[in-house]
Length: 273
Image 1 (tube, helix red, strand yellow):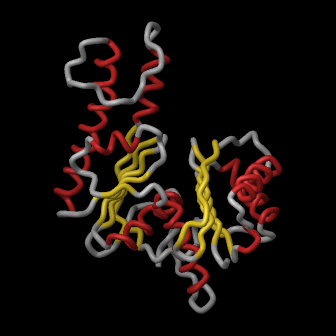
Image 2 (tube, one colour):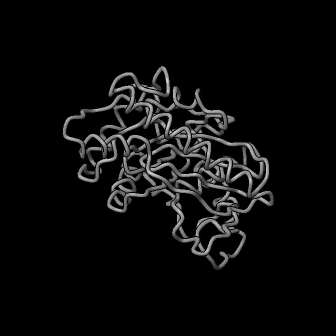
Image 3 (cartoon, one colour):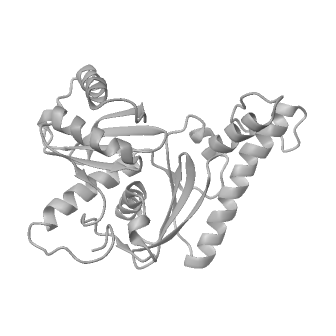
């Protein structure tokens, strides 16, 4: 197998895929924990690969997106231990094929660049990407294929946790849609406010974005356990692609390696052509 190990480290989860060309040979999720050592993560990943009867050393490269600064070095060391090579860390100077038209391109997270790259490759432009993670991010690619900007809001799980912590008599809240908007119990009332409220937030934001850029497919990604059920109640999500970020990272790895050897590096922020 000649493929790529793609790693996306978010604040909550670290997702990993071993790609064999454009096919997924294996896919795993681990908790993002800055206190864990490279040795610990390497043992975990090696065990997962072994159980799947895969050998990452057959991969020809690795690519990393990481929004937790303390874990960049850890994951670089994991790749060196598992693959024997350092990963491509998505950031300034990395070829992505995506033109970023924001005031400060360098502040754009590598995972969101990967989302946009993957979405454009799969659905063309314009396209809207919603990533349901610790935060809800809505990334927008315009009709010309340029990354235009984003909307960022608290994620539903974060809102539920904050409500639980700051309200003495409320415990953990199951993020399931209630049977009706008007809750007959406190639990149903909370679910209505959180789940239906988040649905209203998503649909309102997507509507406003489409009003600015015109009709565009809307792609959702994320691995929260409540997400599939949540999306089934949405009227604005066209497709759910849980591996979108990792697929975008695979594509960035291919593009960067294909172009960096014979083209000078342009000035500007991360991901600019």
